[in-house]
Structure formats: structure tokens, C-alpha cells
Image (cartoon, rainbow, N blue to C red; front, side, top):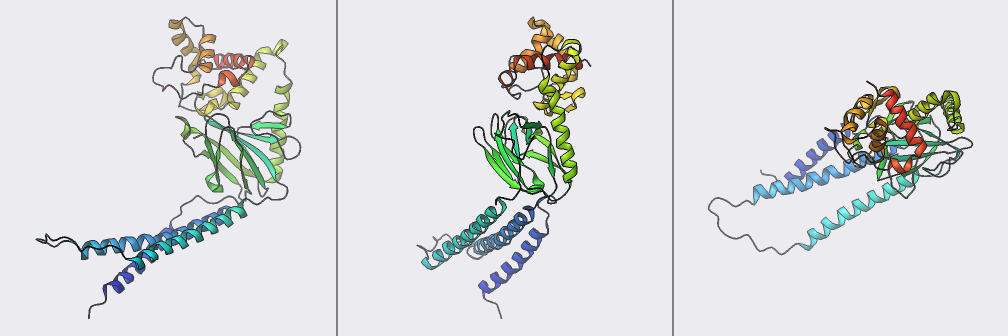
Length: 367
Ligand code: CUA
């Protein structure tokens, strides 16, 4: 005896759904988690998968069944039956998805509130995005470094994100130029960095290890290079690291332009720290400062390049390098794309800083 086709379809659909759900839950969609929010977010994704698979299977089963069962037989040139609609069916297929989506939205909303709840003793860290790197600002005293992207006396700026294991963190996120997105896949959370706005994320790292901040918003040709290290370490190691960072910034802030005897070395140290602080190494190779980028010209050869490309344009090496930083589009080294290098360094660097950076580059880029 033949079974009813609907019962047959339901049977096939049920088996296919169970197989689909099993496969989707078996796949590791995300890297190993490293904060307290990650397991809850992973569960949300599992629930979404469990809900989506049967819907997909249902739609496909009905579609495939209809294509096979109701196809036009060879030689059948007649019109299809004039069907206007089916109110009962329409009510069902509007109500069920509506209830599902509403339920999932409420679940996600409750979860988001839970993840974003204020925690006691939070450390505030500013996250500053710029083409094409990230900077972090910690408080020297207390736990609040002040305005994101500012230059307050209580701020120490770093090129890596250091976090103490189990310490609650509140990130203030901002951008200097275009929209970026702050994302550490192991933490799951992601937030846009928008120029002129300050956004935020709360999280508590809970696994010691090394990760990466990834920019998750297409922000220019160097977007894929916009990654910097994240280290989650023991609280004591974090405290030592922060002390070191605060100590390292102290001499440079008190250095005077009229340096006297050690002027050349001072300029070089300042040039090197400017190179690092402005993220130049994410696009340019410069062995002396640990830059390994290949988006822009190799600066280990900048002294030779400055002569080669500066001479025909009647520029001294210093003029050539200065112009390349201030107006990167004025001359583009053959083989490299125009419009990738930010054009904001002429404004963001002071004349003294620019000159120190140029001198530094010409003195170490002599390969
Ligand atoms: Cu910054 Cu993509």
C-alpha cells in the first residue's frame, strides 16, 4: 500500500533536518573562545542553526516535490489551473516565521543586555582605529584614560593590546579617518569604530594566549593588513607590562628639541617611535623598526630611492621623503598603487616630528 505523499514528504524532511542539524552543530564555526561572552554567543548561533535547517529543508522539500509532481508532461500544452490563493496556508506561513523571528530577536536582545551589563572594577581601554593600524590607550593612574583618541596627560598609547586574564574591560572605540571595525574573533564581539563617535564593548578575557585584533570593515587598500597582536596574560604580568609602558613614554615626553650632544640619537629614537606609533610598519618594511609590511615601498631602501626618484624632480632626499609623507600622491613609486597611503600625516604630525621621522628614515633606510 502506498503511503500518503504528505506523510512521505514529512518523513524525508524530518530525516534531512536531523542530518542537517547534526552536521551544522558538528562544524567548528569559530576559533576557540577566549572570553566569558563567547560560549553564550556560540549557543545563540547553535540555536539559529537549529531553527534555520528545518525551514530550509521544508522549503526545498516542497519545491522539489512540486517540480517533480506538477511538472508539465510531454505534449501537455494546456494552461495551469487558475489558483487565486489559499488563505489558510498564507496565514500559517506568515505566522510561524513571525513567531520564530520574534522569539529569536527577544533571545538575542536578552543575551546582548547580559553581555553588555556593567561589571565591577572595569578597566577602561581606548581603541583607536586609523588607516591601517590600531592603537590602544591605557590610564597611567586609576582605570580611565580619558577621551578616546585624545592626548591627555594620564594616557599611555601602545601598539599592542595587552589584557589581564579575568579582568573586566570596557573598550572605548573611535576612529581617526574612516570607519573601521574592532574585532577579536576569539572574543566574538565586534564593534564599528566610527569617526566623530565613540562606541563601546565590554568583555572579560578568560583564556591566556595570543590573538589578533582584526579590522572587520573594508577601510581601504591596506584593510587586510590592519591586524595587531592581543595578549591575554596573568594580572601580575599585565601590571608589570603597563608599568614598563608608562616608564617608556616618560623620557620622550620630557625631551626637548634643543637636544645638545646626543641630538642625533634623540632624533633617531623619536623618529623610530613615530614610525611605530603611526602604524607605518603595517604597510612598509623597515628592519630597524620591525616593520614588515609590503603594501607600500620597502623603506630599507628609502635613501637610495630618494636619490633615484628625487633627482629627476629636483628634490633633495629630505624634500623627497617629506613630500612622500605629506603628499603621498605627488609621486608614487612605480609598481605601487596610488591612494593607499593616508594623506593625513601632514596634519597629524608637527613640523618637528615630520623632520625627525624623515631624518630617521634616511639614516636607517640605507640598504
Ligand atoms: Cu580598518 Cu579595515
